[in-house]
Amino acid sequence: MSGSACEKAWLDVPLRWLPFLLMILAVVMTVAPLPAAEMSVLLNSDDDTATGCTVVTVDGDFDGVESVLITVVDDVTDEVTAVTLSDCVGGVLAPPTVVMGLPLPWPVGVGLGEAGSDVVETALPLGAPLIGTTLRMGFVSDNLM
Image (cartoon, rainbow, N blue to C red; front, top):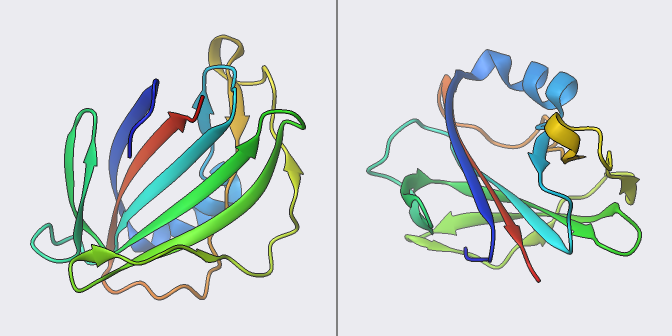
């Protein structure tokens, strides 16, 4: 993933916290005021960096990715317009598929984040297959313009 601006954070959390993170935080990601943007959550669902795919970021490789949750924001409407999931198959990320059942679009919290940054929420269905008891996550945001 590449772009003119990129922010990344890595997080190891017990899997039992996932519903809490997705509902309360709604995987809240703050970014500088957006042109068009894409936010990705890198999911290492077995907490093993030797399995899955490697995703290259501007701050280094994130190994062991089983899936990437991608959230797209429209810069004109300031709304989340798409959420997709790309699974690692044979060491390669497959083309993304639409995450079904989400009430698209929903608004971006423009200026509601830290220091006036925007807040973007995303979601992953609770029925998504997760392997282990610890979920390792990386967060990447790319401005597309």
